[in-house]
Length: 127
Image 1 (cartoon, one colour):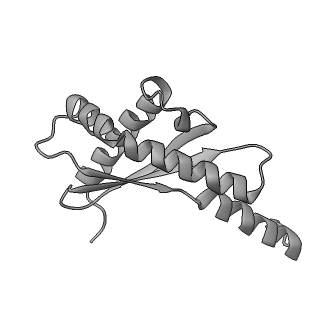
Image 2: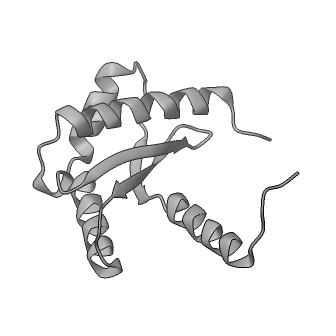
């Protein structure tokens, strides 16, 4: 069966809270290196886990430096997990606050790769 409405709404509310905290409240130097955005939050059907997909936007860095920066961002988010859960519990009235799991979102890189492949093939979007 598909994703329930409650999980979708809860995921969106958690995304808003985490995004707002990244902008205003979290002062960890690991989280101020580049532009960080929460692209999606998926909540399990029982509401016990919430996977937060994070995108780190960097400019002009090689792959190794980019991977290192992403690891630093994940470490910073993991260390702030308790504060984030506390704020989620304060803003969203829940009996049980989901355990947060942070992952790097690679969908933008994948989309860029697919665009490059299509461009190399010379396929046009003519109808």
